[in-house]
Image (cartoon, rainbow, N blue to C red; front, side):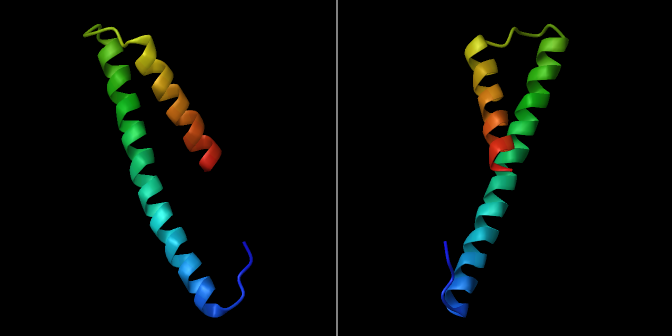
Length: 67
């Protein structure tokens, strides 16, 4: 998207900062869930459902794409 004036640039920078902040929060949650899954599974506490494994894998792939 092209920026035509300073006001548009400032608005886009504000949106970018907000998106970056929210994205980092989501990334942190996915990393935490991944760590919890690893601990649970490695200690034999419970088997992680295939659906949950697939969802985590897809979330990680999407995060890598967005990064």
